Image (cartoon, rainbow, N blue to C red; front, top):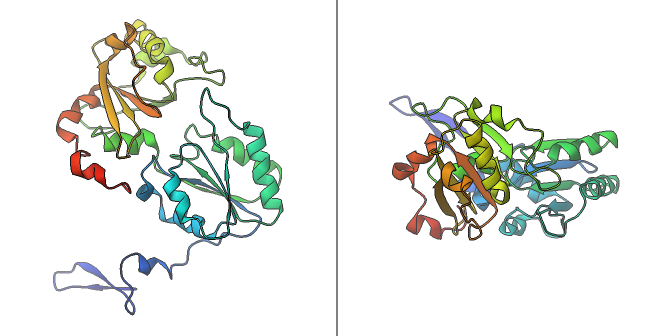
Length: 289
C-alpha cells in the first residue's frame, strides 16, 4: 500500500494488487506474538468492533486464550482454529476463580511454550487487575505485552451521549471503583475530600453501593441536585441509561431493576445527553457496535 497526493494536496492510499478494506491489514508487520509470552489485551467496553487491531492480531495468533466475564463472547469467534479457550471470569457476588489462580494459570500456559492471550473487558489496567497479573508474570520471568483497550468509563459514556470532558462543564474527571475487595464502599477513600475535588466522577462497579456513596458525597458538600447517569450494558444493543440525581440516590432510590454491569457518571456532563444521545433506534440493531 502506498500514498499519493491528489491535485488539491490531499493524501490518498493506493492499495497494491486487488486488496481492499480489511484485506489491506494482512501484510502489515504487526509485533511478533512469540511462544512463551503473555499478551494482556483489552477487549473494549462490549461491542466487538471496538476491539483494537492489535487485539485482533493477538486473537488470530494465540495458542491459548484466558478470558474475563465481561468479554463479549462474539469476540471469541475470532480466535484462530485449534486454540485453547478458557473462562476465568470474576463477577461480584458470584462464584469466581481466585485471582492468584488465574495469574498462575497464565504462567503455566506460557511455560508450556504457548502464546497466551489474557483477554479482559475494557482496558486491562483500569480496575481490571491487569497490573496484579503482570506482577506475577514479571516475578516468574514470563515476557508480556500490554495491549490497551477502550475503557467503559470513556467509551461506554460516549455511547450514552455523555462526554467524559467538555470545555463548558469540566476540566477534570475522576475514576474510582464503587467497592473494595470485600464488596463494601471503599473505606480508604476520603469521601469528604472527593465530594468537591473534581467536577465529574466516573464509577465502576458501584450500583450496589450507590446509595451510600451518594450520601457520603452530599454530606461532603457536593450539590444534592447534581445529575447522575447509570449506563448499563454500554455499547451493546440492549444498552440502557437510567438518569437520576444524587439527592434521589441518597434518599434510597430503588435500583434493583437497573441492569449490571454498569458505569455511573456524576456531574453536569450528564445534562449534555439531551442533545448528544446518538446511539438509538436503528443504530442499536448492529451488534458489532
